Length: 196
Image 1 (cartoon, helix red, strand yellow):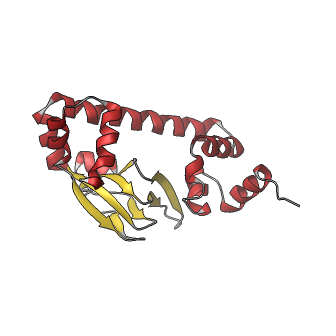
Image 2 (cartoon, rainbow, N blue to C red):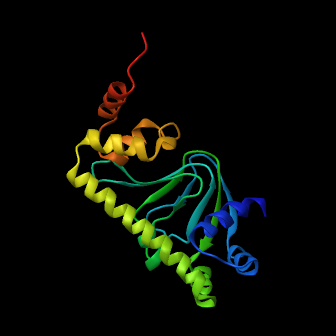
Image 3 (spheres, one colour):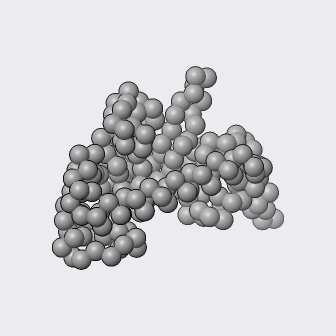
């Protein structure tokens, strides 16, 4: 139950459920332990789960024709991750989702999510709120990538997610922000002057 307490706290931030409603909701999730560098989603296979991160760090990425990795998502504790296009439409994934640390996930499969949504309007409301927040975040990121300089994107990221800077390797953050690792390193050196 302790593993699921984090999810309970997460749900309580978004809507009010009775204890019975909460217990019914979280009973549909399964606990999954993953090892560092383990894939939970791979291209060509349908993403079976929506995953809530209890512990660990994860990345979702695609590989371009030139072999370059492009980080689409990052997730740490209290965040969700999946290849949502694959999961929602139950079609083959286009992304890899991989653990960067040993981790614990609470996973909900597609069929059980549909059951939950049909059981109670509050459950459907939870998924709608989650989807709305995710969509708004994705839109902000697209607009930022299109309208801001690399330095502005870096500063915005550092200010909004200071906890992620030390959790993820530099190449992950650089790819997520759409810049080279070398340029990210240069920006970090400017931002944090070396002590003499």
